[in-house]
Image 1: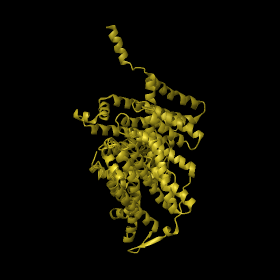
Image 2: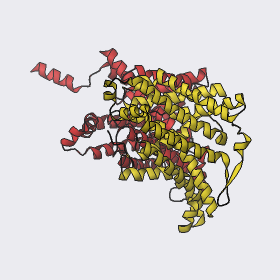
Image 3: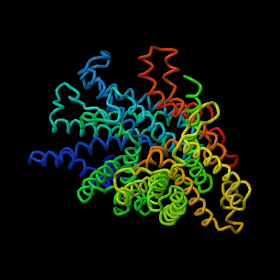
Length: 333
Length: 307
């Protein structure tokens, strides 16, 4: 009996595999290192860390549909952009008048707007895209992403190509969003929440259906699941999370332009997911970290850093299976 | 809206449509036969334009520049196929997309290293640089007319190639059953390489033709390639006929929308509202069209019969 209960207890505790330990260590490092460096007077690396945490959220949301659902969305940066403009446009009107209904500096309003609009856009795009498969899906998500890009390029009032300066950050009660450290912890806490949420979704009955439909859609359908509805729901959730990340990104950069939702930006998000490994919830965070470090490192050597970056991308696709998480898994075995 | 303006915009739309067809035909060929998604197709368009620019200055003649740029672009296409693309056919579409995204980054940076960050304008010979008067008192740039006619000739040539030659027979056979063609003793790898190079030349040709109008610039392919994607999605991926019809349709709708949508809007709303909303809607027009078509026919207008 004693033996049984012991194994039962051990079963309930999360197994500390190499991957899990790595994840825990990374999260602790993300909580401590930026703060220490900032306290030592280096604001630059706190900026990098903030960008990392926000982009991680976007990559984790993309992974929910890409890695777990098998939906290769090439327009995910559009939600980042929509989220950012949901901060930019209300603050613009709060400053310059017009459109009294949405003119506001209230952070809750910005976030709600970002999440709702992103979810609505995801609902429309998803409803159309999910009727198709494979290459069609990739290209259509890409085309809709580009549609949003051109929409904002054509909006003269909000700066068109030149972008829009966000003059003041969203106001939230109890948090001084203007303080870099406070803003960092807001983003960090958001990342933890997003990771937990996606973890719960993936391991729920809903998540099982999504993953089952990725493996064999016909089988899931013959089991009586309406895979279309499940997929659409996942697509909308991913869009909403990414919209939220976009609202934070808009606040962080304080300058937003259509360029942040260009298809190259979507490609970078996909790269983070694949690099980190699409088979784990935490993988994209590692991918985002490696991407940002590569960007810093390579661009410090040469302004033409896209060349080594592109070559590396090709080599990774050709030779590394399962991303860095897959590599860790294989090393752990 | 007077009639001659509509006609001129119609011709401009045709010109865009013809260029889109040159790009889309290569995309749809590589997809139809090799099941390969090539995001870097736009880079070959850009490379074609830059080759044409340099060779035009070197030879002193646009026509020679264009004729010499065609084999150069084919060589680049061959090299890319041999070094990268060849190893990806057996992979899934996600790998195609990521690797060719990497290729775009490489191409854009390499082009910038070789030709510099500024765009290069390509001078036209005087006999192409003028304007012609068409029936109905319409004055239209000669070169744009040449693009339309040249594009239609190429489209006819492709039709002949695909339907009436041995290579075309292999292409059609490859599109319907790759394994069987290989089993019948055809060297499928060489066929793939040839088709990829053909697609590269078609994309490059589109770039060469547009270079005198817009100039050759970094990233020029990344803008138009998405529109080419919309074309093959609407036409049905893998279908040449679909690519041709959809290319002309998208070219016309995009051009006409940008020119006349505000006039149409003014009929139903205030001038001010029309002037603010028309640019936004016309920027999205082809995507809205794509959405509508997909909602009705998810496989596009002319899906290929097989697969």
